[in-house]
Length: 126
Image (cartoon, rainbow, N blue to C red; front, side, top):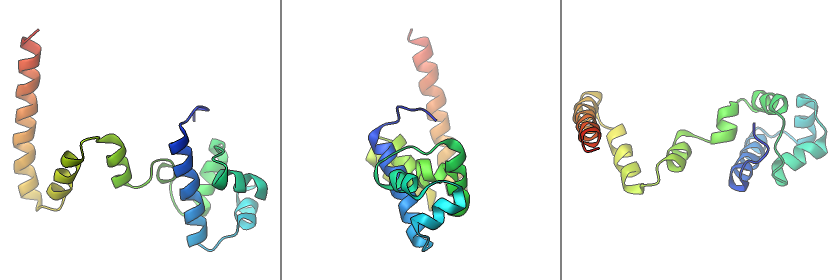
């Protein structure tokens, strides 16, 4: 992982580690012992936004019964919010996601056709 990750990313990672540890009722000292790190380092990962090395992050994920992906990125809704800046588009996609699969397929057919046509218009407008 990169050494220059932004502050929000590190804060989210720290919060997720701490939240999951508390949900499982595991002390920092116990987590430290199980991942072969010091309790002071676990404290730094949780409160000082210090980035754990990849091997420690893997062990933390294992002990907390989660994935490194979740610790880094959060759940799919958090990923979507981070990726999609248009909140109306995100809300619309959430509504589509709960529709029956056949209805979703119909919408996808039209959306994909529109995207294909948009790309063609863009390519020929050069």
